[in-house]
Image (tube, rainbow over all chains, first blue to last red; front, side, top):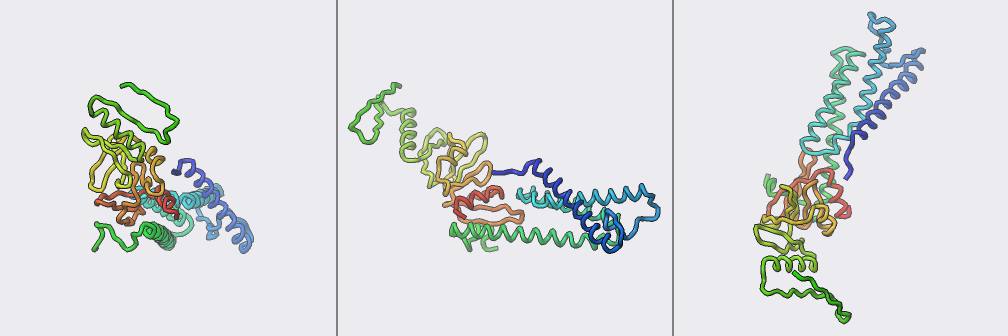
Length: 164
Length: 147
């Protein structure tokens, strides 16, 4: 029986993170350079750096955004790993994963937009999470029904649930 | 105890004969083990008594307190000398399936299956015993059933 190892986590974090950075650079190269005529590594800073930032500050700003995109990509990379578990451990891992993603999205929003814009970015994240869980649960339900059919148990509830 | 073996080319099947002055617990245990070998039964102990257990009558096997137990429909548990992995090798893999690190069930004794919110499957066995299938072992159940 295979078990997810720390190495699996690390590989997914690195690949996902690099994917996030690649996405950022590709997106900013394609869109920002093509339409704005100049290159910025971080697409979303097209709204302009805060006036107080020096060139060193702009670099730090870009690095922060890049780090957040790495983190976001890494979080997507490990998104399926909690589902290898079950019971309370699965629930806790999923909640923790969601919290970390929400924190990343919030930090990125604060860097590039205004605090009032946070809900606009968190709401899609919540919807995606709910959707993924719904699809997972539906898959589990279909899988269980196939097993029940093979065992001749379709339509039979357990004693604990019967009549509820 | 003296052990003697006689080679008889006229015999088609082996015969084991125990010559004893009287039946003792030791000879009873030996008889039980020999019959178990012959008929695919398992040898289980409950209290001071040794029992021949027909696998098809058992609902599950589970590990606990450094022992492996076999449980029947009545809920009685018997201590086995075998480990769970040895039971997996010995028994029909399409009927007896590992559902967690420390438990194996007889699929023919499953009376109900329910899905919990977290993906854990609650399995009810004949006799009312409830056990839980770890998600990691669902694949084994599917393989056993040819899914």
